[in-house]
Length: 173
Image 1: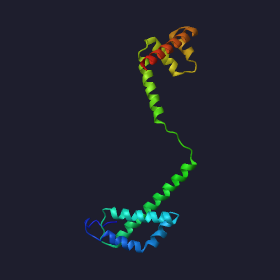
Image 2: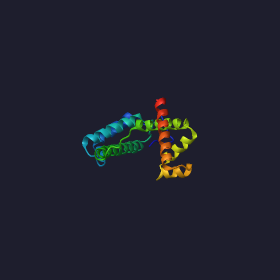
Image 3: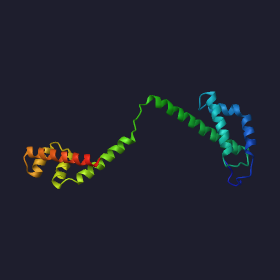
Image 4: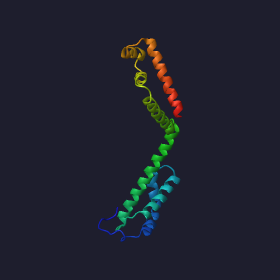
């Protein structure tokens, strides 16, 4: 890479180094084609590496260090090309995972509305709704034992609490 003892602005000129690299372009392309199949892809990788090399802030005192740095850029770009190509191939094979953030947001909004509506119910109705929302195996039986009422009364109270909850939610919308 770059020598630590070399100031950033001193060293060999990058355009001169690229002229030397272009003289060995066929060798670089062979090296790239070991990783990336296809001549067009190898040419693209080489050209992108040249641009990246020119834009880098590195300065080199010796051409060998510049060549090592350029080869690292080539390898990195070639591996990126292979990885992106594999991703594209897998994208066609793998099923799409639906992502709908609006459905999640809508669910959160409805839960907030439900919590606010439940808070406005009388205490007895809030307890009945809590048992209903817990969804125990037999919530009616549990409600009967908790409140000491017959099953029919428990069902009636639960239905009444749910109707009130719907009315509150309808008024809020």
